[in-house]
Amino acid sequence: MRTCAHGPSPVPHRRDTAPVRRAYDVVVVGAGTAGSVLAARLTEDPDRRVLVVDAGPLPRGAAGFGPALLDACLVPGAQPNHPATHAHPVRLTPERPWLVPRGRVLGGSSTVNGGYFVRARREDFDRWAAAGNPAWSYERVLPYLRALENDLDHGAGPLHGDGGPMRVRRGRLDHPAAAAFRDAAHALGFPDDPDKNDQAPPGFGPVPANVVDGVRRNAGLSYLPPEVLDRPNLTVLGGAAARRVVIENGRATGVVVEHDGRRSVLDADAVVLCAGALATPHLLQLSGIGPRADLERVGIPLVRDAPAVGSGFSDHPQVVLEWTPREAWDEPSGSWLGGCLHLTSPSGGPAGPDGGDGPGDLEILQSLVPMSGLVTGGAGTAGGPLPFLVSALTPRLTGRLRLRSADPATPLSIDYGYLGGPDDHRRLREGVRVTAALLASPPFADVARGLVDPGREVLDDDRSLDQWIRGHLGTAQHTCGTVPMGPADDPGHAAVDQFGRVHGVRGLRVADTSILPDTPHRGPAATAVLIGEVVAEAMRR
Image (cartoon, rainbow, N blue to C red; front, side):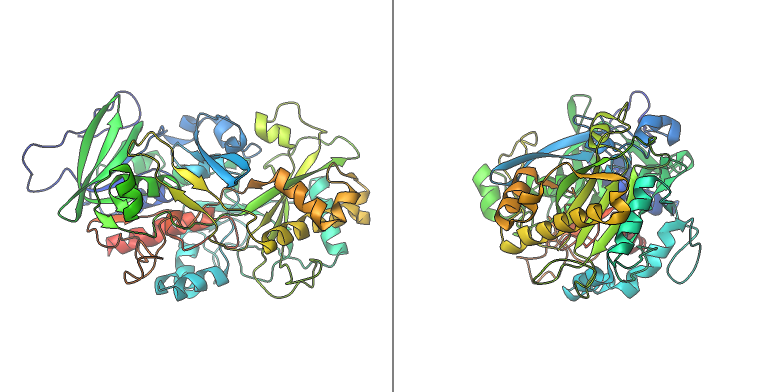
């Protein structure tokens, strides 16, 4: 039976007697960034029957999304209670509660994020490979990175591709604020970094983005356009929330979903969880796969003692610094993104262009839209203060999530563990101070009145600046590592293998940023697409 997201969509019932062949070969749980990729690639084989289920709507084509959701000058995920998101309550520090929104719509968070599409660094891939995942070395993933993209600036070559679903283009930096940022970075001696996807030394440059002519081309729109959704071997079901994986005799045989107020079981030969780095570990634990003590505490029967599920994760702490333009400019056209500076913080002393070799563990990302516009949807915000988003990118497993109840509706307990060590404060201090120095340089001072906050007395004192950072702390929402990949003989650090297969449970995989051992030195959107490609090819083999 074929179902879709348009009109009534009855859920297939589980049969009373096991058929010779189950209803589907694969059920993909989550039509987000990686799930869209997986569904598209798996159904390229016409004899494989794939069902995709998602808790959100699954629109057909750009018209189904509507212009507001695709407008690259807006960031839907920054708007509180946006209908295309689901918010997870978390604690960034014990004193800093926060809400982390994740996309709940076709394309997932790639539909509601900023369109930033920067590859992980070579150091990230090689670190993951050295942790027992040789398929993830930079040399082995580069062909996938080329195949998934259509680079509209560089075309086909040794580092880039021109035939993939994801269209990538870099911003032009012709907005006065972006030009001032570029000139200020040059004045302070930071190197040019014109292609942030070529693994050159970090510096200043435009942001590669999955944005074309002002439209955010999310993974759903790119991989699952109407002609792919219409494949006879692909069934999609929106508005269906997965509640747990059915596991019989050590093998995944289906998924329990809630749809139209009732629960049903979707049978399949294999299940792939692509629900995201917060929802996927929750589903695993509800299914009896997780730390034994946590499952026993809430009364969930143990299927597999997997202590690595949720025991550590990483993300990028972030603070926002606003500055006041000397004049009111027109609102940007094309994208909210301006320029971006990556730099490597030294082990001591002030950060700067001579901070040392490294992948760049600080990011200063420019927004050409005021925070008030990003939060409200952009109307009437021209001339307001403009923000820089300053993030510390060092991969650190500071977070932990725990199950609070066997009820799927009860949120996880999620602690990010930010600012737990002295280097955490130091890196953010360095990022804030470099941003202040850029704004004070002659090229920027010509167009900027300076920072709104913090003032010079705070900037010059470590203790005062640390206090300011704690009071303004946010997150880049780049969660990774909640179901990390690695060898089966290291259950404390690995829950899946390098192709997403859950250790000890046949027929069950994970394909989203949960499986990365830690967060890369860049935002993980491009890497999430890569995960879908790598896992899909492994399954097709």
